[in-house]
Image (cartoon, helix red, strand yellow):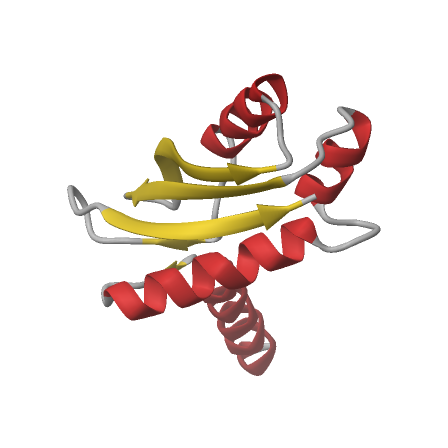
Length: 120
C-alpha cells in the first residue's frame, strides 16, 4: 500500500513538472525557439498561421519585427518589409500575430525582439 502511494505521488509530481513551460533567458535561445514555433505554425497543412493565411487569402512575403515578453506573449509587431503583399493582408497578419502564444516563458519585464519573414 505504501509503495502504491509513493508511486502515485511520484507520477503526479512528474506529470506536474512536465506541464510547466520552459523558461528561456538568453536572447539566442528565445529567438531560436520562437523561430522554430513560427516555422511549425507556417507549415502545411496543420499550422495555425498556414490555415489563417489560406482562410483569409493572404499572399506575399512579410518581414515583421516581433517583441516578446513574459509568458511567450507577442506584445508588438512592426512591419519591416513586404513583397507582393497588400495592406489588408498585412494588417490581418499583424493582428493574428498579436494573439499568437509561444510555449515558453521569459524573465519578467524583459523584452526580446527579433525579425521573422512570413512567406505565404
